[in-house]
Length: 409
Image (cartoon, rainbow, N blue to C red; front, side, top):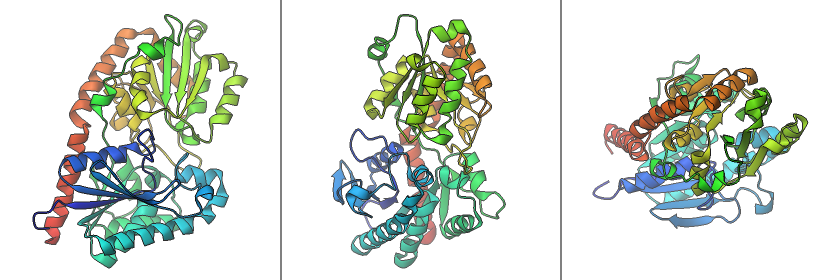
């Protein structure tokens, strides 16, 4: 590499399309902080409209188009896997996506000298990256984020996933639960656990004043942030609100921040349950505005459940955002969440898909402000120590250099 910066190429099916976009925003944070460590970071991601290459600060983003722009529906929105589940006709776009990403990757590798490929999600990025890694002798790291571990469990998919991980010099998972899911029943070596992080400075700067002005004085605010899709558990959350005591329910408002293919159904459910006037759907919100929502909340609820295809939460970044904002969290004990939310230490954990248990935990937290403060204080201390982006970027930088040193590059 002589004296030039280490040059890394991210492969991903999702990357923020604008300054306000929240699509896989954790990858932007990682890219920016790696660039801050002195690396030359490039990102290859699908375009939403126009393809091409742009420089976003110190990060270079290459966008490829895989279908006519007005017909592209596979990536973004609710996410690739939920999109395929909801609209099976999108499987017809998948071969074009794979071909376009493979062609774009090979063209980049042929014209620029990269030291490392970093594929995010095993399928399809890891498989595409494996081709480029083999043809151009560029080592590859694969990061498993959750959906790729917990879902796609058919024999053919498992074979492909294990092929990718075996052929990669190293792979990482965001939690030990994610790593265990992807190695289950195999002889794969255990990947390195490197979580995604959180912008502590941003999320600790929230101002509750503006959101609170929209609520009656003394009102409890329960907050959900995330995609409105099947496995996020919002139907359970709506049911839990109806199970609160009459006294607590009368002074509780639920805000749902985010969008997805379940929104219309959730709005219908809220109306059917008779709580529509106590529930507000905000849709997608500018990432820079989220800290104010967290700061205003009395309790942040993270209620995912196992999806119909086995998908589960790998690492709920929303938990880290809430912790960094000093908010109190109640969450379901699924996937990697228990590695962050330690029951009665940094939050409360309940059984997934159990609205009664969720309602009881909510009631307890809403009626006990001292408990909320204790849990939030402990959670903030842990997130500051373990999940800063500087710390996470340094871990990946170290891993890249270990691989290059071991290969003699």
